[in-house]
Length: 249
Ligand code: FE
Image 1 (cartoon, protein in one colour):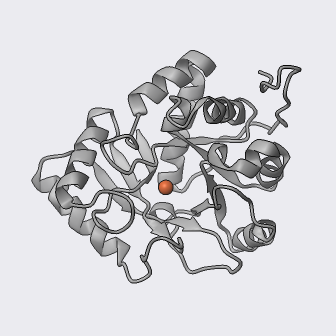
Image 2 (cartoon, helix red, strand yellow):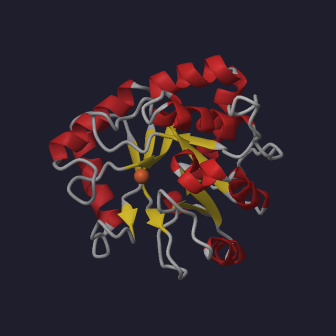
């Protein structure tokens, strides 16, 4: 499996603090069947000072350590880009056309459509990180539907599917996948603690809820990102709630 969203670089953001912790994370990922990770440190995030970081160098250095430790895991460089008003110089995922973008957790800024339009005009495809954890998408899934209808993709976090962020986030994650509003699954792992990979558990949950074919699609979509190929998309459907206030299946 390919993990397209993971905070694996030591001592750069809220990921591992030491090289040893990064190595432990890499071992965990490999043990759950991950063969490649696109390393995505936070960029332009108000809490993390990563402007001066040379990601390519840092990734190459960590790759050397993993080789030395005998861990079979290929690393690629990327960024998780916190959006703000301007178009920014940033790294795409593994040099592909796909750009991982993150909104603030409680809102989707009004300028986002304009920003995405600009990105897409330049040939990039925005991938919205963990929409299931965004309060505005939860209240108004039409907003996500509009982005996806305009050609954006979105990525669900493994821990959301296993209930790590609570029942509401879990329900919304499955709803977005079921309705064609999310197309990719990634760990967004930060550690070997609570925010870890959950690949094995997510696979079980998705296979049980949506079937093996769907799981295979998400796995091959992540491979497509790495190869800079097209990602498989279903026509998006607007989620609605039943009379109990639960998302309709
Ligand atoms: Fe992240």
